[in-house]
Image (cartoon, rainbow, N blue to C red):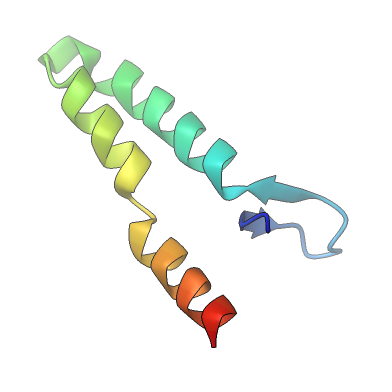
Length: 62
């Protein structure tokens, strides 16, 4: 079952959660590169919606 991060209001376009997390992580890495924290903020980008995923998964199991 696919998990979605975002859906447009008209419901026509959905962004997969994995795509959203990966893109967020890549943007975070670029922004953090100058500070030497690129890899750390990349991981933070991957994990930033972990709670959302856990709730979605829990709801689907009920």
